Image (cartoon, rainbow, N blue to C red; front, side, top):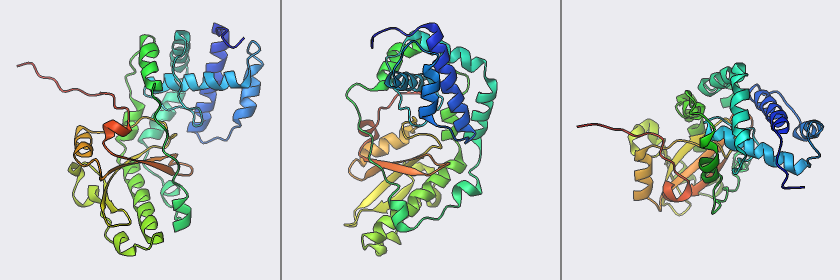
Length: 290
């Protein structure tokens, strides 16, 4: 039963329900995932709730392969059917309003409502979550094997547009500055908290990191901040300079990933060279014929 292939009709219904949820999420309209799971199963051939959840995760993987965000809570999962990627692409073509709303969101400046939240030290420190474990066989490997044969290259890279959103990036850095000050003050190192530097502002973008902070013993932390309004598994972009500095300063280099910035920002951290803590995929090449 568990290995039955999904029919085209089942796949189409599942993609339709998923994209409905994505559109609601873009517009910050509340919805209940469990209720939508139950409603969708009425259109399917005796599928379990868990099977639907896994198919939703497959759709997340298709979207990420096409440089689109996924519905938060459905961690991307590869190894999906080719017809799934085809169906996602076909339905996206029929929903230009979804892509228009998405482009408006990823390019929008951070609003006062998003940026104005002032947290106590205890509150902001509770926003730190566990760093996702890196599996031995990554979902992005499986996306490349299966997905790219079916999904066309999208003209607009929505995740790159968000990565270029300086307003969002700056707001994420300010959130991390507040987090670092709280971490040091609560640890009894207010002296070090006063020494934290907003490097990307004070020195410019060429340093290869955004914030100079400290651990409780006084050693430097070179912090690179990556911020998204979407879920914590959303891919992000790093520069060649950031990769190089992270390799040169492995012991001091820290990635701080800030996510769900529109709602309740959270973050996780990873220490070391970006090539060790992330799965890096080349996205831009510079060429010259001499």
